[in-house]
Amino acid sequence: MPESGIPVGPAGLSRRGQGFVETEGLRLHRRDIRQHADVWRRHGIPAAEIDRAAAFQDRWGGLALPTAPFYEGGPRVPEADCPQWTSEVGWSFPAGDCRVSMAYGFMIGPDGAFGIDGHHWTPLHASTDGWVESLALAAHARRWARTVTRIKGRAVEALDLSGSEPVPEVQGVTDTWWRGNDSLIAVYRGEAVGLEAPQCLEAHIYGGLDEWGLHGD
Image (cartoon, rainbow, N blue to C red; front, side, top):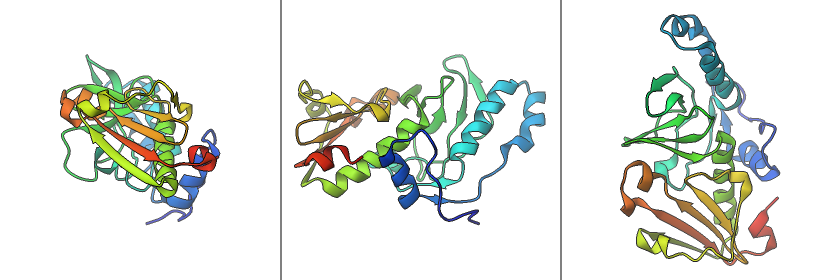
């Protein structure tokens, strides 16, 4: 059941990001994961990792957002769960269930990065804020672009981004956004890297944008 149908955009997001959360999002029931803290500690999970998961839950838990343009739409609803340790990654915790059956899950890494855990851990954005900013930018670009072009595989590697600037608010790691003279370009490398599947590399080019379309904040 909804706690409050209208969410408040968390502090620290851009105006575009906050507006996206408040106009496109829906606040659902937010599960209290602190009730599991004693059990998790008894199983050897450090208190600091439990606190990290709880902080994520406080900020993002139960916030339903529109589907992402890649990764089969992203998490259905962001939800933290029991932290887990692997020798490859260290401590991480789930970031929410997938919308459809997937070959990977969404995770928050030891440094707070938002990413996918497939064949191996692949951070997409340096934080969940960056992921949400990327959703907001994609929604904005779709609304104002005159053309939208999708390219895959080797064609993405051939993209000339030399005249474009990275969009900083998305905090891109494996995935990046670029701003050109009249276009915004999203490059999705996460599946190609995380699944060792270069054919999954994809870019979306939003063309014909004016100054408002390029920035929108």
